[in-house]
Image (tube, rainbow, N blue to C red; front, top):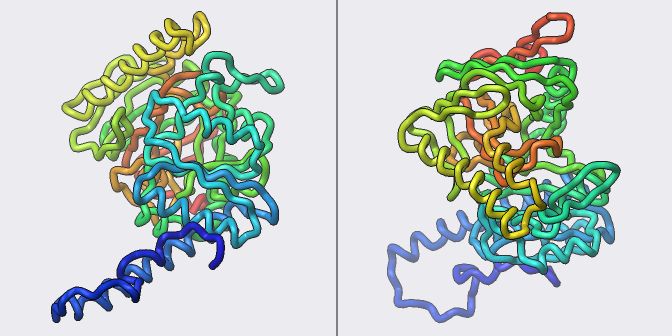
Length: 408
């Protein structure tokens, strides 16, 4: 297929012209099995990429598709498959590699400059993070009264000139397993749960691991990562599969006992011993637990210190350092996992989409009124989630991990 970047056909076992090694009967017998397995995996990756481009993003003839990745095996392979699929759809893809970026790193200037072309579609396939925008942090972009600390956020959330998906730290195995799902069913589930959250004034979450927390929702609207990223301004993860909402600031109170997996500086980890967080007036006040609890505490403290350092060095405007530092303990999200093929693997991108889980994020929220340097998701298993409406009537969304009948 002319013009494609895919290196799949260049793999040694597909090359007929290479010098053959001395005969080894065991290898000779294994070779067809190995080649068949690789061919099947490549086919599955190409099909998942096609679904992402044609079903989720619905790339159209002539549209600019900006794909940003790192030179890391899994994300690079997926990015190349998406490049090929975008070409097949008639798009004009550009594939950009940058070094690996982590929590506090800035994106490369050339990557940020690429947004100046106003691409209609943006795909971020980072082995870590896309990277922060130094200009946006130092002097936030403004659009219709709202401020945005990244040019990507400005274009997608504000101007709505692009649509997007982002898949930080995804793997080929996860991508080919969790992307080909029934998106009509997912969209129906997400919309039903979002409707309940939108009408609610509060939500109560409890779980066998010890979670027992109430969160205010007045003035908040739920968002759905349902895989439909076909309109300007839309976007989410692939794998898709969650409905989420930003708590009303200052209202979260109770206890969160993270017992699935959690994001910390340095990556995502499976939780071996529960991490207990005491929450008061919207903020984490205490953290209890063994080794993983210490890593969460250190990540939050690093964000607090980093915010103050950013202000000292001019990367944040005067006075913003303390605001960013304070919000490093903010409860910024409640999300409910809804992807039937997702499972807890230690990769938060997939973990937070798994059935029978919900997740809370510590740090910035999605309503642009709790700026912070971090957004650390943590899983709670088998939750019971109950919303309360203005008239006092309650509705159960999930009971010990099982969706209520109206949301199935």
